[in-house]
Image 1 (cartoon, rainbow, N blue to C red):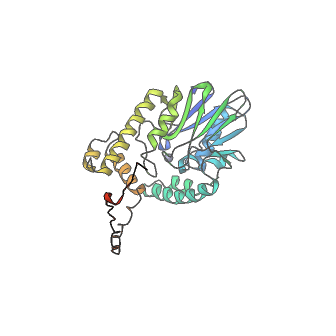
Image 2 (image 1 turned 45 degrees about the vertical axis):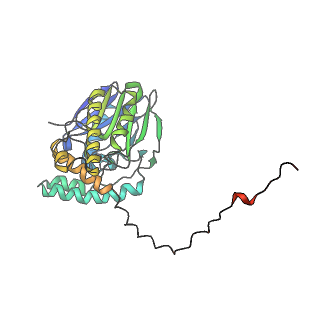
Image 3 (image 1 turned 30 degrees about the horizontal axis):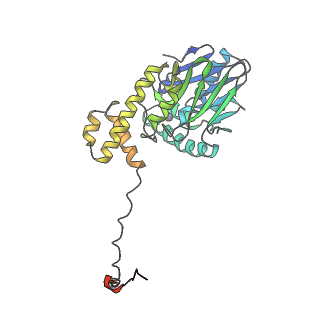
Length: 302
Ligand SMILES: [Zn+2]
């Protein structure tokens, strides 16, 4: 299977990429276009930029759905551009460096030397435009909304709404054909974040990995995420055993394991045992005063 375009709505495209079953996005306006994520490496980015140029020659801006390497290591192919993200540049560079080493090593272990080298030599291009809350971008004849989401899949999730076309690009907040990835995620907050994003009932939801799908698919996935969060909480409170949660996990054992581990990582250590209060010095009780009612003699006749 090679990479292929899907037009999910008029002039709104999803590129289905073989590597990591990833889904990249393109929204075309009358005057400019918006590129959503850029792929796992500089090579992947060049392939994506070339594919975009077959669709449009309008100037582009880029949006990063979050700072995981597969969503932004391809940006050097896009040259000078406005790059929108929730996380700041310094955070992207610091985390990108770590991920570049870790993922190059991982591809090498899997015997994929060429891919490992592509990742290792990809130039990191940090974002230069910050999204806090929401930003409307006018592409000419159509406005897209870049919206900060979460805490959810990461601490810097960004989704892209195309209201005129009823499309939501959800980044890795949703995955189709694979379980959501809880590594570095926020299991308790994540379902609520997605429910909020679905409240305008987008007709098409484009996940960060897997095929675009509809509102009802997204709704079913968020229900399973809510169930996962509930099981994590019940394990933390001792109502469920880890074995029960693993056996009945809506996304399977490995995903529940990752969610449980992440919850433990996020739980602050219990506060230190309070020291026994120092014995108070014994003060004698205040003296009791007893009034004798017969001490009063009121003569009402005077
Ligand atoms: Zn991710």
